[in-house]
Image (cartoon, rainbow, N blue to C red; front, side):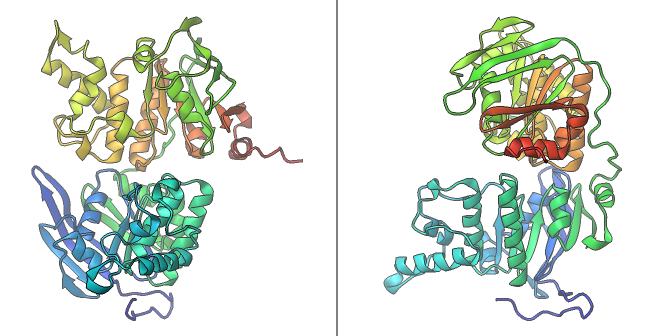
Length: 512
């Protein structure tokens, strides 16, 4: 465990960092990802690392965990300079990371996932299976995870897989625990349980680096903050000495006064009608209309069926009943190609698997559905491809070295912008945005929201699926609340409040 550390007499917390980075610089061909940044992590405290996508957060995590080695700079543990030539060296030093997308193995058991790479050994160097199961059970009990160590991982849900990832981190007696967007795929109840776990880790003296775009999380659990912008550290200090407005100014270098810049605009005629839509397992009896220039929000808890409904409208899955009308005429949509031909496009929640093609450059991702605009007699015109891609990526304020850059090398927020640009280039009449700002920073959110408002003002009909109540309230003209595959309510105007949304989504009756 941790050695004794100097404790401040007034604050009751350590004033000596367990780990300190200074002057860290990391360059790639043509790109300086980090420029002389500093970061200090204290035992028993949570340090929030905040910054826009592309600010250098992922790069510093890779430096901390030995995946990347800095070109310049100094890494100290307990005041002693050290290096991490490999990830194994970082793990042996007690540095571990829990990522947004857990890197686990479905075909292995919980215990095998916890101890993979460092399983307890018995005689002749063979794995001591009883000891591994026993130690896995001890760690799971410490974090109140009611899991059977022998259960195959594939039988667990996302939240329990996160618990396994945390157990794996603790199995190496981690001194520094890095949590990278750990709540992105969790329900509110699961988030609360994670907060309790963070408090337990603090009480054990772990130093925690917490990376999140959600300010409510940061202000709830963090003791300190460090802000990165454009590969540089631009601020650090105690959370008690900073407010949300100051953090935003540090992150983006400017005030973001209008995170939800919804302007007044005229809502026109009905463009899309969905009638009697049903699916054998996901939703039933879905009826709604969408009008020109309108932003129609869809809200609901995990498992409500919102994404499944949108995928059926876009032709990814087949409904068991119901019809779609465009401008009052029946539309036969049996595939995404049919949907696109009818002016409907869909920006999925999982941009990595369903939205972008990793390995292709930005310009080809953007122009892929619009090749008829950029080709002549079957031959692609490179200049036209770049022109089309540049038009839409600039409107979304895409941050990239060039349009030739591989989409897989972009930050999550910039990947989302590429996916949105790709579908907007088809000049649709209806755009479905499924969790359009999930996992992206506040500056990128403001850009996406501003563009969404601009699209509505130009007459595009927008469906926005979101789990973030401020986003739903700030951007929607009307909101449809779904629960267990059914429409629970349609809300607009003065009735559109956080309490109303949650009550309908959770199936709670109105207050007496």
